[in-house]
Structures are given as C-alpha cells and as structure tokens.
Image (tube, rainbow, N blue to C red; front, side, top):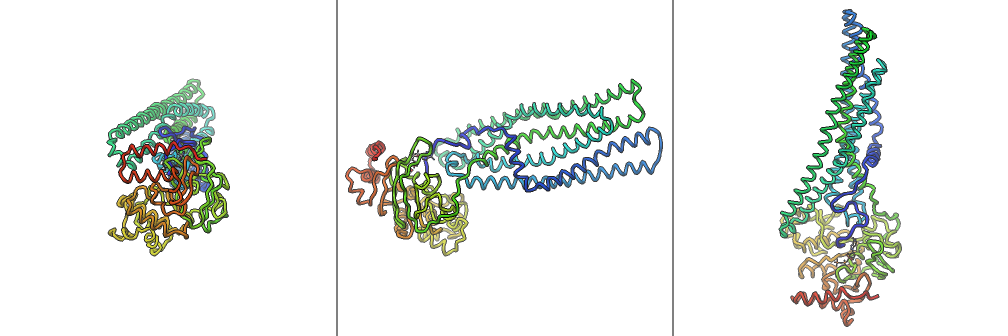
Length: 622
Ligand SMILES: Nc1ncnc2c1ncn2[C@@H]1O[C@H](COP(=O)(O)OP(=O)(O)OP(=O)(O)O)[C@@H](O)[C@H]1O
C-alpha cells in the first residue's frame, strides 16, 4: 500500500495535536447526544427544582420556630412538633428526590456517552483512506476511548452537580429575597466574585488541561506504536531510546498535570472558603449596625438565623460549581477533540444505482495526485476485459499502488475516468461495489480469531463455502494440519502463521466473497517460490471467471497474465504479454526482468543497483 506521505489535511501533526477552543464544540456535542433524552432531562430538572424548594423550607421553619416560639417563650408543643415534623419530612423528601434524579441524570449521561462513542467509531469506519495516511493510531484510539470517557464527566458534572447546585442556589436566593431583599443583595455580590474566580481559573488552568490531554494521547500513541513495531524495536536495539522518549513525555504530562493541580489548589476551595467567611462577617456586621442603631427588632433574630443557614447553602453550591470546573475543563477539552474528529469529512457514498456484473474495467485519461500540483499518474488509459488477468509492474514509486487505490475507491479519481462494466466507478453503490471486489493486500491483515472467522469476516458463509474458498486459495492443506483445523485460533495478527500462510488465507478470504474483480497488491512479495506457485496456480484457475489485477514486484507472479502493464513515473510505458514485452529490446520490462534474474542468481548489489538507478532515471515515455 502507499508509502509514507506528507499530510495535506491532517488530523494531527505527528507530535502536537490541533488546538481548538473547546467550549462551543463541546456544547454542540453535548446537546446533540442528549437530544433523544430531552424529556428525561427536563423531568430531572423539574424534580430537582422541587427538591431545592423543599430544602429551602428548612431555614424558614427554623426562623418561624425562633420568632414565634423561642423568643416569645411560648411552648405550644403541638405546633412546635408540627413545624419540626414538617421540616423533617420536607428534608427527607428533598434528599430522596435528589437521589432519584442523580440516578436518572447519570443514566442520561451514560447513554449519551455510549451514543457518542458509537457515533465516533462508526464515523471513523467511514473516513476516507486519505485520513488514515495521516492519522496516528494511538491518538485515534485515545479519542475514541479516553476522550469520550472525559465527555461522560461533562454530562455527569453538567447534568447533575452543576444543575443541582444552580437550582439549590436559586432556591436559597428566592427564600432570602422573601426574607430581606437588602441582605440578599449582599449575598448576591458573591456571584460576580465567583465568576471572576472561575474566569481566572480557566485562564490559568485551561492551557495546562489541554496540554495534559494531548500528552496523554501521545503516550497512548507511543505505546501502540511500540507494540506494533516490537520486533523492529528490539532488533534495532531502540528500546532504550523509546523508553527515554516515553519518560520524557511522561515527565511533561506530570508537569502539565501539576500546573492544573496548582491552579485548583489556589483558586478553588481556599478562595471560596475565604469568601464564605467574608460574607458571614458582612451579614453579621450589618445586623450589628442595625442593633447599634436600635433598628434590630426581636423578629430579625429569626431572619439572622435563616440568613446564616442560607449563606452556607449559597456558598456550598458555588464551591461545588467551581470545584467541578477542573473536571469540566478536562471534559470540554475531551469533547472538543471528539468533535474535531466528528467533523472530519466522511468518504463520499455513491448513490444506490450502479452494479458490477461482469467486471470489465476501463480507465480513460486518468491523472491523479495526492496533493494538488504533484501528479503521480499521468493520462493513464487501459481496458481490462471481464475475466482477464492483468499484471501491473514498474519501479518503486511508479504508481502501481495508486492505480489500485483508485480502482478500490480509496481515493477519489476524476469522475468518469474509471468505469466498470460501463458504469462510472463513483456511481456504483457502496454495498454492491465492496461485495463484488476482493482485495489481497501486501500485508495480510488477520484478526485474533479462528481460521474460519478470518475467512468469513462476518459474512454469513456456510462451512462448505469457507472450505471451498480455502481450497481455491490452496490454503486448505495447511489449515487441516493446524491442531483444530478451521477452528484454530490464530492469535493477534495471525501471529501463529508464516507470512506465506497468512497470504493464502487473505486470498481465501477475498475469494470467499465470490468477487467479480480481484485485486492483489504485491501479494507474493514475501512468500517463497513454492507458495508463489500455489498463488499463481490459484490465479490462473480464476481466469475467465474473475477479473484479476495483480501488482507484482516478482515478475514471475504475472508471467502467465493476459497482459502486463508496465508503469514508469506514473505513465503507461509498455503493455503486452510476457513474451511480447521480453521482445522489446532495451524495453523497461526486459530490463526489470533481467534485474530480477540477476538478483535471483545472487548478483552483486552493485550490478543490480546500476540497473535500478538506470530504471529510476528512465525519462517518462510520453
Ligand atoms: N498517500 C499518499 N500521499 C501522498 N503521496 C503518496 C501517497 N501514496 C503514494 N504516494 C506517492 O505517489 C507515488 C506513487 O506511489 P505508489 O505507492 O503508487 O507507487 P508503487 O509503484 O506502488 O511503489 P511500490 O512498488 O514501492 O509500492 C510515490 O511518489 C509516492 O511517494
């Protein structure tokens, strides 16, 4: 498949990910995911408001007790008992209601996050291949798992703790307004002070939180990369360097986290505790002044009691809200990273019209470049009849894989340039296209599953169909030698098989779909001559039934092809049978063939690199 390439529209440059202001993205994501549960959320809010109202009754009951019974020293036991019982019942019902809403809103949060995670995964599966040329696996995994997990916090915090705190705050404010509006205004002054703290907190900790998440994702990326490349890592004795790089990232993560924690430690609880004390002192001061001025009536002692109770009820939710801000900040950043992934454009899906019937491929004046102004293919025209076996050869970087990628719709070619059975490629329905086209990639991809599951790949195939495909690919023999035959688990990436065996299974998988067209991308590059002959045999048997297009580094694989396409710097240089091409004196194919023979016969690398250099310099033929 394609060589490494420079990004044109990156998800993320290799080390530092994209910065976006998190707030708006997160809000959009939050609202979209919670929309199906609107009613639940509204119901939750209504019950929380009722709970806050009931809770606000407590200090009022206290005030009534002080003013009506305690200060006048009136021992009306039934009324006192009624008042206490009422306060007790209101408090109990409020606690029960809040517990129920916690369960309800947490449920909404979990389901919404589940929805987001599934959406993100589904979206990733639909992204165009160009995206994956640039995406870094570990970072992507981090977005689908860690970042969506952070979004869960957003729901739990926003939907429950913050909402609940705001409602309690509102209830207490209304009660204070009713008791003494001037005192209420003093308490209200706390709100801008808290807003200022939250603003400062965001300014101080925001960048650190964003950086922490980026670093976490880079840590994940490095672990994923190291595991995937473990043989190379160990063989190249690079483990120490990787360990040091990991330690460096880990240290940076620690530093960034510490900056966050410092902002939390300074700005949240201690400052608010101080404000609480300041507020109490102010209210007591005002009452003191009234007492000195003789304006304090006995009745206001109850109000004083109620106010002192309410102040704690105002300050506590404010503390809760600000304490949540550190979590909220992380959740917002996580949500914004998830949203950034969700806005990546999906691969275009063809309208459900065209079908592949016979498998005739026609390419007409096809030019293509991965980046604007840097064409890789130039005016390529080619017709491959249905059931034909065509080989594509050419030097490294000549554009072989690119042709295949375009035929596979991994990248969009100019509309109408490629037609299958007369239908423009882009007009063939996705399902029909994928069902009719099989691919055997250069690196066979096997799941950590049984042989049978690897061939069937989730398609509803009978055992007989699986076995027939394996026989056609000459894989049946070695499969039967495995201890549990088709039910043998293969380990991750088919770790228990040789490369050749994996390749035969990949061919079996492609054949099991009974494709009309089969693409092979250097499927014989890593296998021995004996296995190559098996593959050749399998391909020859498909002749007339399946259109086969095979890229081959090893020319012997396509020796028997109906036609061999020789590419040179993205242009069609030669086209013909093996014999015809060998007949072109000094032709590209002839020289490639000679080169391979030299290599097979163990020629010195100097000899072969001379020819390789010559082939690379070969000027474009048209
Ligand atoms: N995803 C990509 N983004 C940008 N450029 C690419 C991409 N894939 C390939 N290229 C470039 O396109 C050119 C053709 O590459 P291609 O992979 O098609 O060659 P190839 O003939 O298959 O080579 P090889 O035999 O080494 O596999 C090369 O110059 C390569 O660098």
